[in-house]
Length: 89
Image (cartoon, rainbow, N blue to C red; front, top):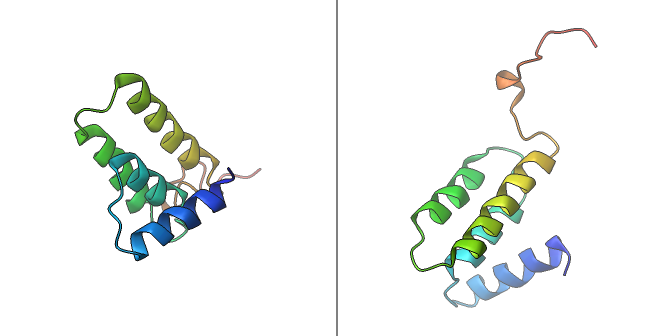
């Protein structure tokens, strides 16, 4: 299932008042449009770190998925924090 479809499905469940699992909440936070801030990525990683009872392999997969989404994000590092700011190409 494509990322946009997963996000829409999870958002629909949330708006219908259904509780999301920790994994679903992490997906919702890390699949949404995070152009303005990276706070939701941070929140997703924090939730995963605090989650109890999730098998280690699934937790590792979830961490990997969130980090992949961070790195694939078009501008995952704000320009004010970029190490190459001001350098000529």
